[in-house]
Amino acid sequence: MRSNHRRQLALLALSMALTSGPACLSSANRGDDSGRGKPEPYVPLAPEGPETIGFFLARFDRSLVQWSELKLGSSSTRDQKTLRLLEENMQERARKRRDELVAELEGSVPVNRRIAAAALGFTHDPSVLGPLLASLPDPDPEVAQKTLLALGVLALPETPLGGILQRLRNDPDPWTRNNAAFALLAIARAGSTASELAEGCRAALSDGEPGVRAQCASTLGVLADPDSVQRLSELLLDESNLVALAAATALARIGRQHAVQKGTVGRALASALDPVRADRRIQLLGALRWLSAMDLGSDSGPWLSWAHKLP
Image 1 (spheres, one colour):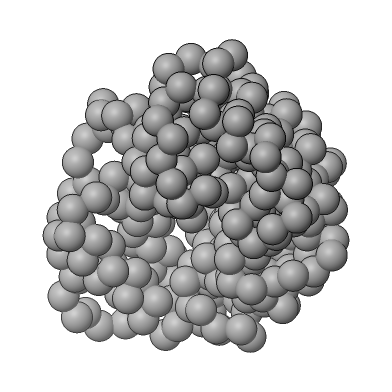
Image 2 (cartoon, helix red, strand yellow):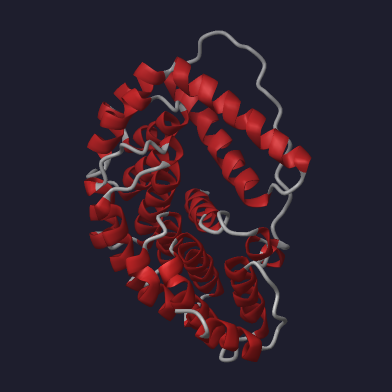
């Protein structure tokens, strides 16, 4: 059960890396998830009397599983409404037990600390940032992973990045590095422009874990970091389609926001059309159409001609 939960959260982090681009790109891999079951409907819990913190944590852990299932599988309006109601309920419950959750995080048994760390993120209370950052160096890998998940859910642009980047650079556990990349992506989307954010993500583009590469590529796209164009261009031929999609979306975003990079980005995308498989070719064409705001068809020739006319 615990291993499945960790895998689910890692898949969640990876899927969220690909939600910031144009619709034609973000929908390209929906078919990959066809084997996953439909999330159970969320039914708000009936009001009850005071419950022990242990019972609270056990119930919140079940909500975390349901939340990650909905994040991964919700596509209909009904599913999105269910997810929103669940998140509101989780926030309300976590805020009511905020002080107890901090106490559990700082001094309880590992299993309680793991759930408490994740729950604190759902408070969306800036005052929990300090306790979460303090738990980042924890030797228990799942405490660190849940803390990183919480920092991503909390998503405060003022979050100090040193501890997260330390985990991203040096942690031997790919689950932990995935969650570190998830936290950085969420913090970037919240508005952080810290110089070390782009630097750390550029370095992580060579990480052996596809989820890390994809999320860091997406972060560089959110930042529209022009210094990343060369490395992102190399990822267009990455062994993982998810990484290539994230890189293509990031490049198109950079080209749209930095006119001086538009030609370089266009040439990189157009040059990658012919060497790749058909499914990835569709993704690259989508990025080119978004970048150029026009449609030159599916052949590489017109796209290369257009791109080479740009500075």
